[in-house]
Structures are given as structure tokens and as C-alpha cells.
Amino acid sequence: MVAAHPEFEKLWEMSEEIVIIGAGQAGAQAVQSLRAEGFAGPITMVGEEDFPPYQRPPLSKAYLLGTFERARLFLKADNYYAQAGCELILNTQAKRVHPAERTVELADGRKISYAKLLLTTGARVRRLRCPGADLSGVHYLKTIADVDGLQDAFAPGKRIAIVGGGYIGLEVAAVAAKRGLDVTVFEAMDRLMARAVSPQLSAFYAGEHAKAGVKLKLRTGVEKIEGNGKVERVIAGSQSTQADIVLVGIGVVACDELAAEAGLTCEDGIVVDRNARTSDPHIWAAGDCTRHVGREGLPLRLECVQNAIDQAKHAALAMAGKHKTYSEVPWFWSDQYDLKLQIAGLARPTDALVLRGDPAGRKFAVFHLRDGVVAAVEAVNAAPEYLMGKKWIAEGRKIAPEMLADTSIAMKQMT
Image (cartoon, rainbow, N blue to C red; front, side, top):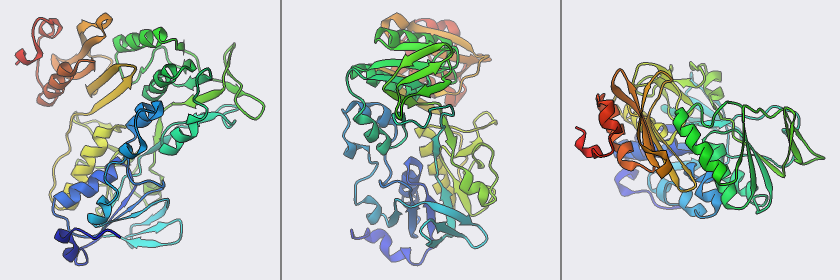
């Protein structure tokens, strides 16, 4: 057992305990922030996986490609949690929360008391519901175990059918193409990443994937997967596509069942206020499992690292008695081939779009203007546009469209 840091150990037994359910990005950030804000009480973190908190974004990118070692996935060093006075209970499910007695019941029968509870339960993959979806060879990608289980089948010459043309599906498609697999992507909508990016970005990425040899089947939903005990083909309309592997990436669902069963208000996620507090005054929530009020006053649920980190910080502040209104600019990213897509803000279909740069040069940005104000930016291999756009979104800045489109004007000159 690693000794606790002397700064905290004398005070822990004298303070109320905080319990965190969910050992992911938000949970790890909450531990760090609680200690940074001076909370000296004991902390217990409960996680269902065998691993302490780790990064998920590299899983569908460099980790799947084999260029990112497992040890680099973990958010903290092995001894961090013990030194921070956080007990990790891993490979264990939290079965029930009892708000009246302020206890968490674990699947192994144990009960843990809490003064304050933080739910960072995240989200789970949405399952494909069609005949054959349970055949051997159908994979999902959410955890280290998912990627490790995919590696043996992820070999040159294998045929992979990817269901879903969003971030996960396209990141896997890019890795598969690099590793020499025969790749087909099935997307039910009429363009790639339709829920996340502008039509210009969709068209650009469709061209890049096509150049890499990826076959794109738009407006094509998978109706059936066939095979004798294992995947052999995918049926979509009148098309039959041979496949050795199927990777499903059709979104995620908030893990809010534990909260709902405890009587907390839930609506496609655990409903929280701007301090990340739930409808129970002793329970907070952060990350993919939550629905909160966004910068524009509308309720939303964000599935991204930024929200997990920032909302966990605000939850920790509130639990430590230092309330701060959560109003951060959302940001996202995706790595596909040698292209880095960075997005800040939340776009709307009615936004006015301004293209800066030439997509043919593989370095450009699309700015979203709403009543003249910069509301979102999508940048491909264009870090200055992304960084400045993010700043403008936070400031509510108006920038003339003709200036944005003029690449002879440097971003830093647009003040």
C-alpha cells in the first residue's frame, strides 16, 4: 500500500466522505480537483472495469493502430490514487443508490456511506438491433477490452463492414485502411458525420476516405448480418457485402439507470444544474451521463472529453463549497489519416457558413455565424483558426464574413 500524502492523511478521518461512481475521465478529474480545492476527506471511486481511469479517445485511433502503448492510456500514475487518499474499487458494479440513507450498494453486497455522491457513469454503446447482430465477429468499441478483442481479427486482407459513419466509425475506417483491410462503411443518413459537421466537411471526408480505398454506402441501413455462427456477409437493401468483421458505431446511450432508480430527475441523461448538482442536494453528476443547460440556455447532453473534464471541475468546486457557473465552450476532435479535425462550439442547420482556405489543400476551416456572431468553427489541419474561433465563441464576437474568408489576413490580425 502506498502511503498517503502527509498533507491530507491527518484530516481524512475527520471529514465527510465523497463517493464517486464511475472510474473514467470525469471521475479522475473530480479527484484531482477536489484535492486542489482543499477537500481533505476520504474519497472512494467505484468502477466496473478492471482498469483505473484511462483516456478513451486514443482507443479508436492510435491504440487500435498499434502506435500508442497501453500504459500511456492511463490518466494518472499507478500510485496517484493511493497518495491522494482515494480508494479504488474496480471490477465492481454499483447496484443501487439509497438517497434516504446516503449509501451506495455494490453488486458484491457491500454498502458504502457517503456525505456527497458524484455520478460519472458515462455512456454505453448503442446496440445494433437486427437479425445476426449477435453473431461472432460483431464488435463495438468503447473500452480497452473492446480494442484488444478486435486486434486478432484486424489483419491485412480481412474485410470489415463498419455500421455508422460518425466519428468512431470513420476513425476505425481510417485505421483499418492503413492496416490493409478491405473497408466498407454503411451510413443510414445522406452524408458522413451528419449530426456533427457541416456539409462541406462531410463532402471533404467522404473524398478522403474514398481516396484511401474505403467504400462508402450512404443512405444505406444494415438490415441483417448473416453467417454460420460467425459473420460472413452484411445485407443492406438489395446489396450483400462479404465481411469477416462488423464494427458497430451508431452512437451511445447515457448510463442514467442508477440515477433514475434512485429517484433523480433524468431525461436522456441525469439532469443537473449549472453547478452539476442533480435533483438530490447531496448528489452531483458529470460527463457523458448528464443533461445540463448549455451556454445558450438550452438543455443538452454532450459526449466529449471537454464536458467530462470541465463539468467534473465544477462538480468538485460545488462539493467543496465553491460554486461556479458552468458555461464552457464545447470542443471536440477527430484524427483520421493525417487529418486533425478540431471543432469548437455547437452548430445549427440555420447558421451562415464561411469557408476559409481550400479543402483541396487539406488545410481549411468552416466558420458558423449566427446573427453575425461566431457560433462554431470546424478546422481541418488549421490550429490557428480553431484556437481563435474558440476564443471568439467565448467572447460572442462578431467578425465580418469577408474577413474570415480572406486568407491574406492572418487570424491574429482579426481583432
